[in-house]
Image (cartoon, rainbow, N blue to C red; front, side):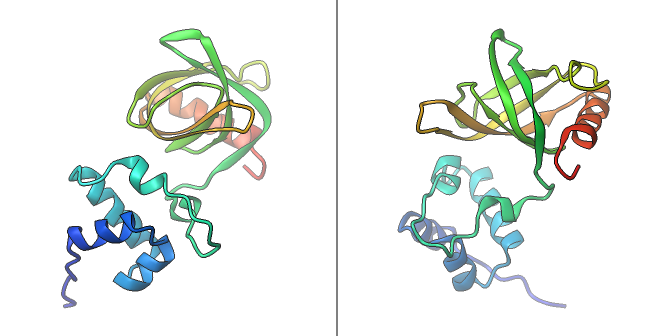
Length: 177
């Protein structure tokens, strides 16, 4: 039976904060992309580092493993613009950029990393999809050059009926979905 390797949190935190890329971290600690993602989650769960410290790192090198390579569910890019509303303020409307059963990227709605939002998607004008809602936590944010806010959200709570509508949306309106 293989023995588990131990990676000292202090060592990897120092390396992350020093600017090591994901691929350098994987090489140094002999981790796969999935293993590195698991390690990141453990660091976040232990509150050793913040989401922005881990996922907000910017590398000018081409060897950084992008977060999209660590996804457990594939991104689905929408063929049409789909409006999304902040349920706490329905006048706060944005657009879904990409979506999966576990998360989405939203343009046009302000958020901060760690903030939980209740969303409502109304794609009924585009297809036979009923409006549906869910709760999601913001994992990262950025501003486009024109100042438009963009944020990535992890879906944390979605009723079964809403999940059904989400799946219909993914099948009908995504490129390659």
